[in-house]
Length: 278
Image (cartoon, rainbow, N blue to C red; front, top):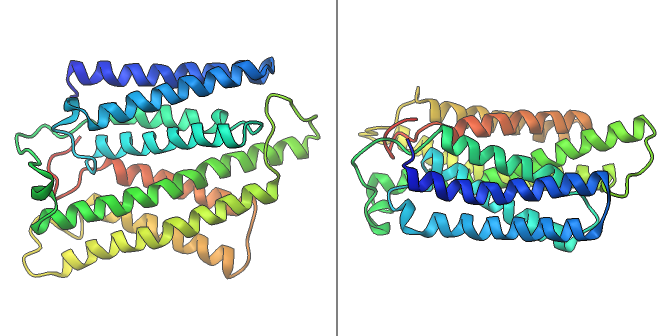
């Protein structure tokens, strides 16, 4: 399990995100610009503390491509996107959709802590050499793809919420202004196009290592490899639906949400070359 000091650090920036979300919800009920500005401030403070934790001595034994490290790094990237999006598109309710995802990833990082192993990852050079290099490369590529998949997931949730509001003919809420369905769908499409090449490259690294002589810890039946393969197949189907039969809207959003669920499974499973398990 994560040690006491790590839990204190995580609790601090998670609390900042929680306050930011509460202020966003307050702004939804009683729209006041000052609430949004304070929420952005708490979100920025949480992101700074989050980043300091990941690069500080408290995480000296935490690999950023292990389950906990991957989830925390993805949460940090999304928290930065919340701050950036809220500043540049301050009328759009980014926080109501991004912050719950950030908090969920932080909670999962605690549920899936670093593997209990005495095998230290060593220096950066030790990580990026030999067989461990390929394991790290695979993890980094999947993590970069995860950013796009997460953005696609947020866009999918926004699409369903906006579609429901339009169908129910609800009056626009001053505290919850959103993009049009067309712009949300375009955001989803760009996220998929960003993620698929990176995911393909990450899976390609896995296949090369599986086929190489003396693959060692790599195994076709490893859950990490199978979940990544399943994620790639879902994306292949999604791309076919979008560009083969020109499916858009709710169906595309639903497939993106399925891909996100598989992504969480892939990130939460331990990597065969980085040791240990949850």
